[in-house]
Image (cartoon, rainbow, N blue to C red):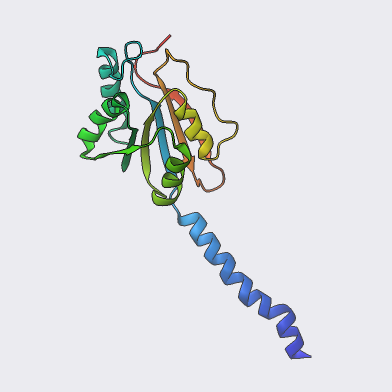
Length: 176
């Protein structure tokens, strides 16, 4: 009788409690992954380079993120995103990692698997910033950024203790 009680009540408790404790420890002690997402800074027309206003905006991005403990900076293969990321990368002594703007699922996978618990800046485009937010699991994903707007800053907090969070802000001078 005592043995049956052990297998029915005590044995499951011995197995379940360590599993629950392990799960809670992993879940609670994992720092959230924080992803800062911006569109490249201002450019003239369809140029692949940022203009003078864009240089000011890129410097402003560096100023507001220089104490955010950024660990990794991603920019797409295009010159305008690299130019936007470079002031902060230089300030922090980081190398800008290039991602393929046409393969957003791969970028999201890299962020969520390789860089867990890190703070990451992603410099993208009017369409890839919302796509990246969607690929990181936010639904509905934001609409594409209007072609004449460069001041959007999204902060995606992943694996936050309870729920993922998405914050939208603006930085630098207002754009129309």
